[in-house]
Length: 154
Image (cartoon, rainbow, N blue to C red):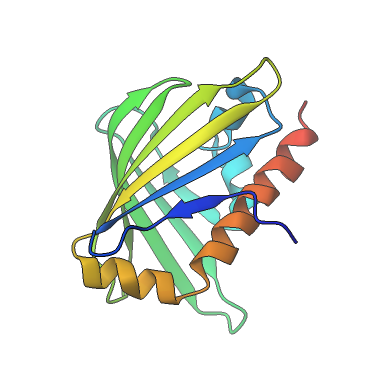
């Protein structure tokens, strides 16, 4: 399966730049990142809290196949509707530290849009650890799922 999501990871840097063009209008793509009901569908996670505004916060929880619960949380630092979300992201009870995520949304045409994710880790080592996981496959699958879920809302 073709990976439509592109990941740029420069050697020696503690960041990633992830880009994806979607066959979705900008407003619909943006909703995938701010509406709890849609987030739950494409992420396969439970939204415990989602206060999408500047200085807002969020808390998510997922259950693995063995029934163990895993939490994720963060604070929203910048929120510009249909343009930009800057937030922190933390996977609870893991060795991974807090990361900074900057999401930029842009229209390509009336029916297509682009997402650029700039993810900054605490260290180069931490970023490289994440890249050893099936990260690229996972983010591509998540982005494919966004398109599947949102096509139903078109």
